[in-house]
Structure formats: C-alpha cells, structure tokens
Length: 424
View 1 (cartoon, helix red, strand yellow):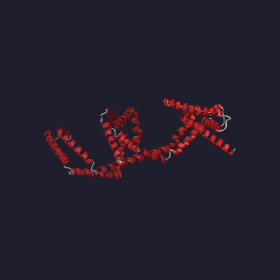
View 2: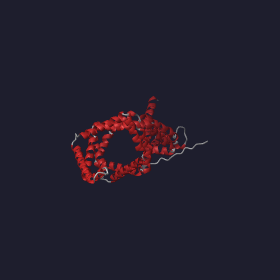
View 3: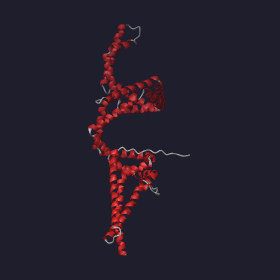
View 4: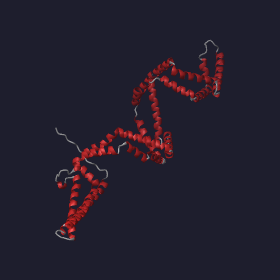
C-alpha cells in the first residue's frame, strides 16, 4: 500500500520585498563569483613564477580552493551542487520535516516558557499602553463603536426559539434545582438590615397617596360594592366617603413620618419573614411550592421572552444611535478606565499580572498545539519551493561565507607558502 503526501506552495504576501531580496541575492552572488574568477585569473597569470609572484600564485590558488569549498557548502544547503546527487547535499529539501520538528522544539523550549512569557509581558507594559491609547477620545470612541456594532449584530441574530430553548432547557431547570428559600431569605435579610426597602416603601406610599387623592370616586365605588345590600345608599355614601378621608390621612401620615409605627411593623414582618425563610421548614416548604407553581405556569415562559424582546429592542435602539445612552455611558466608563490606567500604578501592575497569568495559562494549555503548527505547516511545503524561499531570505548573507572563504583562503595560502619557503 502506498501513501502520498500532499504539499502546498508557499505563498508570499510581499512580492515587492521578495523582488528586493532577489536583487540583493543576485548582487552578492555576482560579487562572490567575481572574486573566484579574479583568483583564477591571478593564478593562471602567476603560474610557475617565483619570488613575490610565487606568494601571489599560492594565495590565488588557496583563494580558489576556499571559494569553491564554501560555494559547495552553501549550495549544498538548498540543492545538489551542479545537479550531482552527492551525499548530504540538498539538506533543506530532503530534511525539511526534521528541521521543522527541530524548530518546533526550539521554540517550545526557549520561547514558550513561563519565566520568558512573564518577563516579556512585564516588559511590554500592556496595561500602560492600553491606557495611553484609550486616553485619546477618538480611540475610545472607535472601541465603543466597534463593540456596539458587534453587540448589535449578535443581538439581532438571536431568535425567539433560541431564547425559548434557553429558558426551558437551562434557566428553568436550574431554578427548579436551586432552593429558593435560603436565597430569598438571605437577600431579604440583607435588604432589611441595610434599610434598602425604605426607598421602595416611600415610592409606593407616594404613588398610593397620589392615586387615592386623584381617584376618590373609584375608591368609594369599590368600597360601596362591598357594603350590605340592606343599608341605605345615603348611609353608604357617608361611610365610604369617611373611609376614603381616613385612608388618605393614614397613608399621608405614614408617608410623612419615617418613624411611623406602621413602618416599624412592616420592618418586623419582613425581618420575621427573612428569618422564617432561613430557619423554618414549613415556610421553606411553602416557598418551594410557590416557586414550583410560578415556574410551571405557561405565562412565565411567554413573559420571559417578552422581557427579552423588550430589552433587546431597547438595546438595539440605543446601540444604533451614536448619541444613545448606552454608547455615551460606555464611552464615559472607558475614558474613566483609561484615566485610571495612566495614573494608578497599582492597577497597572495588577492587570499586567493578570495578563501574564492568562498568557501562561494559554501557553501551558495550548502551547504544544501552537508550536505543532510549525511542523504541520513545513510538512505541507514543497521541498524545493521551501529551499528557494529560505534561500531568498538568508541567501544574501550566506554569500558572505563564500566571499570570506575566498579572502581567508588566499591569506592562508600565502602563509602556507611562506612557511614552505622558510622550511625549504
């Protein structure tokens, strides 16, 4: 059974830069070849001469040897020299997969280490840079605009059936599993302890008083309907009118007196209810039954979807308006956060540590997959094309090996000739 390995061409995103590299490589190759040709011409011109020209001849001969040897070494990295399949040549095309795995291990061992990552994040000063960038109102507004567009797009793609599935499959089962009494009791106890309910009570009393004053006929009619049938209508009118006056006075007294005994009684009732929800099994059982009846009612789902749609419409309308409340608030909060980033060193240090922890977590969890991209990508490359691309990037510098080999070889040749003359 035979297997085939598919290869993918290496695509360049910078053709202009590649063309500049190609011209630089040709120039350096021309210089290296010119030095070899010059050494050959000098060697031929000084062949068989003694004295000073003997030194020149020896230097030229050694220069040719060094130039040819280094040409062979450089060429062998990328292809077979002169097309002859000499062993251990065309190293990159033949062993690109091994080189890819070696590069993967090198990157993982030397760059994706916790100490290195933390040092680089600390040196980068991410939070400080973000703060300075966001301090520009145009940049902050751009962030708000982009987030608004993305948020509006996401909200617009959420369908009612998805919301219904979320309620029925995620929220409602979770609410049924969670005991409501401890949660409600603890919340109510905190509300009573911090007097947070007083504002709601004041609002309710104010609205109730306004309604009673503005709708006496409705109140009298409702009370009159519950009067005995045998009482004279005139008496009913007098009694219900008096009841209305007393109720208005009573509500007004409670509204105006923060220490009214009715308020105290309400506080005691709420505190007792909170304690019962936390400690009394009977009250807890009644709360659970009430929760089940509420959750089982079909209107709960419809109400949830209606609330979601109303919230979504309000958010979309505000997000679509560049001067909407949501965008203005987001811009104000983002600008405030940018100011804190630029002035509070402790906040920057905390965020930089968080960024470093996040980077270390990602690398420790997914580092192997990240470095494996190197091997997988190189394995997909065509060997010859990979060699050409690598040579295009580093070949110009490698030509200096040939140039240096020519010059150093000539110098060594002169020294060897001088030693031979001295010893002879």
